[in-house]
Structure formats: structure tokens, C-alpha cells
Amino acid sequence: MTVRAEIGAPTWPRRAAGFAAAGAMSLYLLVKVVWIALEVLHGTADWVLLNAVTVVMAVAGIGLGLALAQPWGMRLPAWLVVPVVWISGGFLVSMLPYLLVSSLLPAGTPEPAGEPGLPAWETVFIGAGFLGMALALVVGLPLYLRDRWPWAFAGRAGAGARTRWIMVPPAALAVLWTYWAAGGTAGLDPSAPPGAGADARLLLANSALCAMCGVWSLWALGGGRGGGARTPSWPPMALGFVASGSLFAWGAWKLLWLLPPGLYQPAEYRWLALSEHVVAVGAGLAMVVTLVRSTRPPSGDRPADRHRQNRGPRHHAGGGTA
Image (cartoon, rainbow, N blue to C red; front, side, top):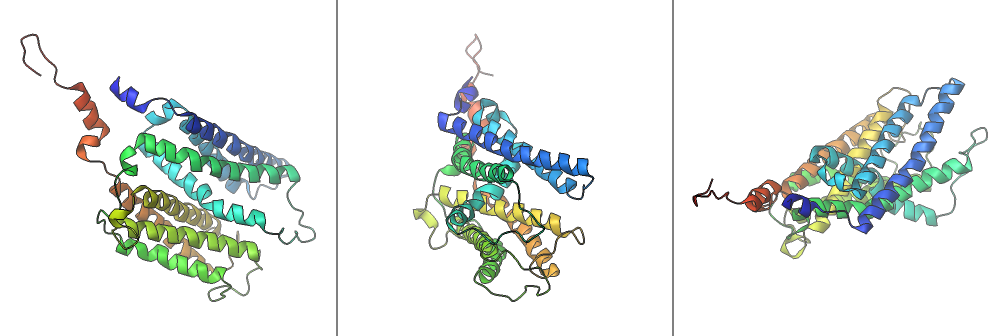
């Protein structure tokens, strides 16, 4: 009974955010299902596999939203919840700066002749799905994580974790992406099709921002200047969680497009793109392992320990304990 009381029912902001996330991702799922059906119907199934992957991801996102909103979400095993939360936050929450800034910029270059854009309803559903899910996760994920693992949000940064070597890969990626976002051309393939101009550079700047946030979070958790005992632990933990998820999720997604020969030609040289995204995946994994190790609760704060304490000694009729 004590454990159930600690878990409790979700608060109304968490419930609202969870249901909003599930509803928003349902719009994206609908578009993908329509695309797959049309590809199969018309015999153009070249993109069915990749679209099927996004369908699985959308279903996982809907399940995550429902888990945030319902009491049973607190009883799901951590090994199932944490990867979905991490990858979802990395894919969507990390894109909020890009989505907000791009919405203020003029419309991009129109589609070339013979390559019509998406129908209006698909554009609206995809945009609403991404933005709605991202905003809902910004509210719902911290509330869920705080309710389930409160010790990760307590205390101060600077526990002395060894993070220096882990900071090198995301720092290198941040420098590279900032260079390209500022207009640098070294490493770019002149034979590649022209990119999307300002929009592509804005995406690179967004990726660089995520990588730099990850570097700062590691620096703060390691006790560096700008972190240490004056900084609460939750800002570097939250930023590091999203940044590491972004590096891993987007790096793995881009690798998925690059590995099949002839499917996608990146703006940079192919060998450089492969190396870049492999480093991003490895950096994201190393960062999240460091964060998980930094969130281990004191022995008396572990749920199993609290459960044993709440049970207390069992008294026999003769006055002894068992």
C-alpha cells in the first residue's frame, strides 16, 4: 500500500501533456499509414521500409504519451520506459529551437517543377504532430521523471564525475556543425545536390546547439566552472538527457539513410557523413551512461530500500521479531 501511495495518480498537467502527445503523434501516424497504403497500391514501394520504421516510432510515441497520462505508466519497467523517453526527447524536444525559429523566417524555396510538394492536409498534420508532440513532451516528461526518479532532480551538480574525455566528441561535432552553419565549405562535397540553403544551415545550428548543451551538462556534472556546487543538478541532467538523445537518435536515423548505397547523398563527403554520425551515436550513448550513473540514489532512497523500511520488523505474539 505504501508503494502505491508513493506512485499516486498523475497530476492534471501530466495527464493533459500525455494525452496531447498521444493525440499529436496520431496525426503523424495517420499520414504515414496513408503513404504506405498509396505506395503499395501504386506499386512504388521503394520507401515502404523507411516509412514502416517511422510508423513503429509513431506508435511508440503514442504509447509514451498514454504512459505519461496514466497511472500504469509508473509501473512499466525502467528498461522499457527510459529508451523510449530518451529517443523521443532526442528526436522532438531537441528540435524545438529549430521549429520556433523557422516559423518566423520567410517561406523557403518552392519545389522544383515536376516535384510537387505535399498536400496541404499532410503538411498540417505532420507539422502539428511534430510540434504538438515536442511541446507536450517538454511538459510531460519532466513531470513523469520527477515523480518516478525524484533523486535525479535533487541536490547540486559537481559530484566529481569523470566527464572530460566524454566531452571531446560532442565538442568536436559542435565545432564542425557551427562551421558549416556559418557558411564553411570544407568537407562538403561539391558534386552533391544543392542543399536547402538557410533551412539546412538552421538545422546544423540547431544540432550544434544540442551538442554544446551536452558539453555544458557534462562540464557542470563534473564540477567545472559554470557548474559545481552552485548549480542545481536538474538543469545539466535535463539538458544532457535531451542532448544525448538528440545525438544518438538523429545520428542513428541519418546512418539508416546513408548505409543503403544510392539511397541518399549527403551534402558532405560520404565517408565524412558516416564518420560524423557514428561519432554522434557513440557520444550520445557515452553521455547517457554518465547521466544514469550520476542519478543513482543514496542507498536509503532506493524504492526497494524504502519498501523494506516501510514494511518494518514483523512482531510475533511472543514479542520477538522476524
